[in-house]
Amino acid sequence: MDIEQSHLSNADIAPVPPERRKWGMVSFAALWVSMSACIPTYMLASSLIGGGMNWWEAVLTIFLGNVIVLIPMILNAHAGTRYGIPFPVYCRASFGTRGANVPALLRALVACGWFGIQTWIGGDAIYKIGITIFKWDPAPAANWTGISFPHFLCFIFFWGINMFVVYRGIETIRWLLNIKAPLLIALGLLLLGWAYNKAGGFGPILSQPSEFDSGQPKAGQFLKFFFPALTGMVGFWATLSLNIPDFSRYAKSQRDQIIGQALGLPLTMALYSFIGVAVTSATTIIFGNTIWNPVDVLTRFQNPAVLVIAMLALCVATLATNIAANVVSPANDFSHLAPRAISFRLGGLITGVIGVLMMPWKLVADPTGYIFTWLIAYGALLGPIGGILIADYFVYRRRNLNVRALYQAGSEYHFSGGVSVAAILSLVAGALPSLPGFLVNVRILRVSAVPKLLAALYDYAWFVGFAVAFAVYLALRKAQGRPGRG
Image 1 (cartoon, rainbow, N blue to C red):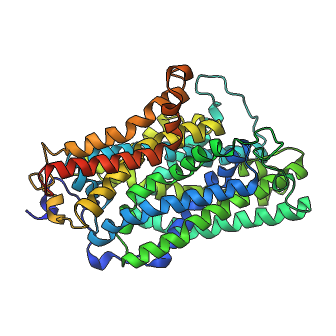
Image 2 (cartoon, rainbow, N blue to C red; image 1 turned 90 degrees about the vertical axis):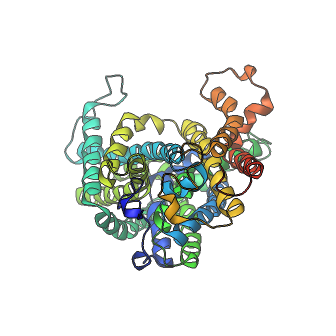
């Protein structure tokens, strides 16, 4: 049976032919510059500084986290580049033709949360334009959602723009990415120059000591905060470290995707988070209080034209990052559930609806919850998936896949009823060590109910999950014998 005729395939998840693989090194570097230069990156260091780090400790933690996550990113990208397959099809080799829906849906649901967060940021910018330019009355929230009706309308308006771009398709997305990177980088650098000139320097945050230094309130507690923070920084792009085949399937060569990603990701994340720290530090001098959100900084500008242009640039940039990072993959993942029934466009709409239902304004309301609940919690699930994929592809199969069989229901990747028991057991084994700590963190269990050592594993959730799932998967595969037996 041809791949095109299989019920496990459609035009969106079929292998990309060699003539369509046109992404070079510059394309991958630009992809990561485009996705990393975003508002959550700008605000990322704020939660670390709020926890006690000084500015360089925060930026260094972000840089290290992205160097670490770059490793599984490049490894998982290999299969996409070599075989032209997207993430959910890549998962079929280890999880089975039906079992691949498990990692695909877990990845998709995380993307829905991120889609909601980015959409909320864009809608918030529109709302604040209205307050500043049109003198809207900032009505307080008076309902169970926690936000006012005008605020919600701006959120839904920006959501509608996202859905329109998804409907327009991949060419519109590519166009947005091309104009987005210079827009937000230029905006960030202009803010940096404005802050430096207006404050006569970058201000108190860049000169304040770490709270973990000797004589400070949290002296001697640096490592206790650093490792969960590092886990959170790895979790920031843990989603893309899995579904990077969705992009690397268009690469010209392995060299292009490896060097392009290495140049584009860690440095951009560190630079843009530094811009956020420096501008925020200057706001303490300029306005008399510390403002972490760049949208709130922009609303302080007196010139309406400057404000509108800056806010529109921010909205376009947020739109491009949102769709590239948080719609392309889940649209493919939902399409994988029923390839003949769910297209890329319908998968994108499903992503958008779930993103609203997750109430993203609550996910980012508390910086502590943002890192220690949201980023670490989903890292506890995605780490094991990454361990399984890399163990299967690089160690067990030695980078050899039967592409035609990946799209056939009764092939060597069918396993037991389409599901690989070894992969599912490894996923559960990888996630379990972090579960007690997660239940303590969300206050379902009391701290005294869980042994301290067991609860502490949650702080290393991505690393523990990756290592355990990697080892368990290979042990189960070794017990089963050669590739393709179950």
